[in-house]
Image (cartoon, rainbow, N blue to C red):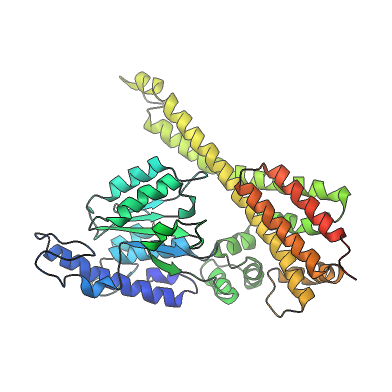
Length: 427
């Protein structure tokens, strides 16, 4: 295994910043250990020693916010940083070989908690429980670390609960939050102000292609195609290169552009798109649900014999019902995410046609569709028409976030696209 930061693709400047911070944190941890008898604050000052911690304060802080577009590797960066903070190698920061690095990257380290919202949001009760556990002193590592993936799904109450502990952090606790952007829609302004911001960029096509070939052993031609159409999302590039269902779903989404121009095909295409997203979500959720259910049943004594097993079975109904509720919420979230990805693809297709019609020299998001779809579309429709199509897709995404049923939202979208493409803007 190589250095943990090698997993961050195309983020050279960020890696340098995080390495410096991890190095500063190591020195700060040693100072805290040496002055454990005194009242030493992690990022404040020690009693009787006003300079303690000052050299590290500019590089290391107790709360971090990793932002970047989907696929840029926000959670990967946070996990790599957590491994570097816990790394036991005396010389190398984030060596990737020691037990601390290995367990953090495998998400099994006792002092690193990965919080991944499974449902539509992360509730205040869950956050309070997380905060309480995170406030304890670390057991084996230098720091107690909490990684919150998709921090944009924090409810207002959950964000406030997290804010309280971020404002007055325990001396050995570090919070690593991941969100799409610093927009108030994604992260509260107050919480954002308490964090050091790390902005990730979208990896280049060449970087993604190299990873697919070198790390995943994917054929060079397939890797090149997948890297060019994945929108900078490394995980999606791998799925497109290896999963026929992922490729079929992309084709279904892009097919909306042609189908929406005719009433006879528009609504069937919309129905097929929603159905394909639901099918993909069910497949993903079913695999997770089965393992979770069996694990809980075993923990509750299902299949056991002897004294006490009957009582355990009688008391298991409530726990199983709560698990089913969480699984249902997760399935809804997965379905939305799958459909949203398809809509992003569709918006990017109209964007490609728009920039072609305007004569802009920019890289296409769907270069494989230039000749048979985007170029004819750019010749047929005016920039105003194409812009309305983009707006229709974006409004559909907003409707889905507002809990509008997918069928209604997508039907409304294809209706707007049809109207836009039949308009007479072009002279």
